[in-house]
Every structure is written in structure tokens, then in C-alpha cells.
Image (cartoon, rainbow, N blue to C red):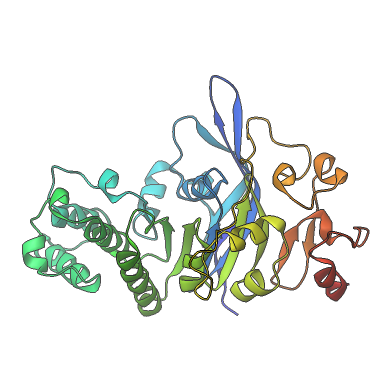
Length: 340
């Protein structure tokens, strides 16, 4: 079994605003093995991107890690100096952001922007760095790389800009790549092309990947293991097969039911999860999903659920998995019985 390259332990991240403390990430723990692709799934506001920014130590001015640790290759990133962090970011841990237009400088040719990363983290000459950029452009399927090297971001389509961001993230062949909703703004055809590129490059380079998305369909394309987030917590985690075939949390069920099925009726209405995510300035006393859950009991409103270990790789944070939970209106009775 591969060693862990990244270990996030009991991570708590808050934003301190004029109105109060927003507890955006509340006790998140997970490992990432060498060469593994982990999907982090959830709605907007679930804490996915804040978790990624906490790993990268790129939180906004009002944000702060208030508890836990993020260990990369044995070192706690929160304890590194700014100089040490700069040596890690971009070189050993890289990130692809959701909106490439806001990440690329509109006044600098894209080739030069990628080359500057190599200038910072390597000893390459300018000629060597330029040749490396052209090689990266070819890797991510940017046509006419020599001509495109001198093009500006506005001269690229959204899909091509995202390819530039992938090239930039892979420039120094990082150990860990974090992809934060990298295909959300793209049409389905371009999204598929980007996912194919990421799968191919991950296999060729052997890097570990954290893929953040709200779409379980995308997760099925690229990930081997999945962590489902809600209300700043991981509420279910397991292999891709376990999440799809042995679903063990009502929120995960809701996400699965809200996506279109290939074999479904074209006129069939998609199910949505009623209600809205909790206000994390005032986190719920009990289960974060209780107010939106069709199976909630009184205990769900008052007591935080413990994590149930269903298998070596599968966990869930739900009262319905308790041996004391009633059988009636319980979608996990069979799963609970098998676990017991």
C-alpha cells in the first residue's frame, strides 16, 4: 500500500467577520496516498474550497486555521515560514482554480506567465524554460504552441485558458495537484476533454490529486476514493464503489438522486435536495443536515452524530447507522445489519 503524501488531521478553519466567526471547516480529517486521486464533493458552501485553500495556506485575510494540522511529506505546512511555503507552493503542491480568467494576468502573454513559474522554482535558463513551456502546451493539447506562447489570455477560449492553468500547475511536476472545480464553467464536450487530459497526465506523472467538485458524475470519471462534505464536515467517505453502491448518508443519497441518469427518461424531473445549507456562523447543535433530511429523528437535531466505521475504507456520520436506530423509514437498515 502506498505511503501517505498528505495528512489532514482535525482541521478547523474560520473566517472572522464584523458579524462574527464563520466556522467554515469543522474537524476535517483525511489522508492522500502517493499516486491516489481523491474526490471532495459537496454543494457550494460545504467547505470544499476552504479546505483546499487551508492546505495551500492561501486563505483570505480574514481566514485562519484555528485547529488541527496539514502535514505534507511529514512537515506541518502551518508551521513553515513564508519562504519555505513559497518553495512548496507551485513546485511540490500545485492548484488549478475554477476561473482561469481571474488567475491569469491579462497583460502578460500566457507563455511568459508559465515560464515565470519555472524561473522561480528551477535553475533553467530562459531558453530551457521556454522549451519546457512549449512541451507543457503540447502535453495539454494546446495547438500551435509556438504561436500561442505569445498570446494573451483574452485570445484563448475558456477551455484553452483552463489548459494553460493545467500546464502552469504541472510545470514543476508537483507531488500533489489540487483541482478546484476545474470544469464547472465549461460545456460538456470541453469538460470531457479536460478530464481526459487530467487522467492521462496523472497516470503519466504519478502525482496525487485532490479533485474538488459538486458533481458526483465527474467524480466517477477521475477518482478512486470520495469524501462527501456538508456543513464544513466530511459526512461520508469511501471508495468510489462504496459511495455509489453502499451509500450511507442521506445527503449523499440526495446528491446521487439529483444527477441525470444515462438510462433515465428524458422527461423525468430530477430530484433536488430541499432547503439550504446551514449558517456556519451559528452551526447546528446536532447533525448539520438534519433540517433538510427526510429521515431525521429528534436526536439528529440535538446531538452530533458519531462517525461509524462501515469498512476499512468506508465511514459515515449519521445517527441512522446506530444499532439503536429504528428500522422504520430508515434507508440504511440493510447496510447497518450487514455492518453489525
